[in-house]
Structure formats: C-alpha cells, structure tokens
Length: 120
Image (cartoon, rainbow, N blue to C red; front, side, top):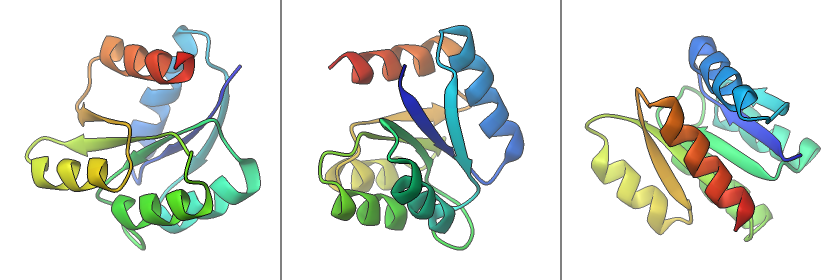
C-alpha cells in the first residue's frame, strides 16, 4: 500500500485527510506541520505521495514543493488549497504539482485524486 505524507499546519485537516483515505484502504501515513518538516519527512520516509498545504508557517507549500521536486523530480505531489488561492494553485502546477484539491474538500474528491495518481 502507498505511503502518504500529509502536510498541513492544522491538525484537524491532517486528521480528516487520514480518516477519509483510511476508509479507502490507505493506512501508511506520516505527517508534517509545515514545509520545513515536510522536506525533512520526505527525505526520511520517501513517501509515494505528498499531500501538501500551500499556506503554512515556517516554510510554505510552494517552497517545500520546489525542494521536494529538486530532491526527486518524479515525486508525486498534490497541493491542498483554500478557496481563493487560484493564483497559488497555478504556480504550484507550474512547479510540478500533479493536481490540487480545494479545501474544504469532499471526501470523494480526495479519494479519487489519490487513487488516480497512485494507479498512474
């Protein structure tokens, strides 16, 4: 089963992602609270997929995305973004994100996106 790194500064959001993906059979998770921790966890865990919030303290998701893609150009990263951040989403896709999920998300959208990427 895929190892997924869930990165969000909100503990509630990390829990929601884990719970929703858990219902779809995903069980191997690691977590980070900011972009700096995300890069550290990526190096340590080498996850199959990173779900990465854009707006976070210490280091934002775009900076973390750039570092992760520099470490592994084939890294699979999906951005999580709040409504109204369309310009940041476009930038994230240009930096190599495979997709984006708008928060608050529907569980089906999260599961479908992760499944599509993991099966690709």
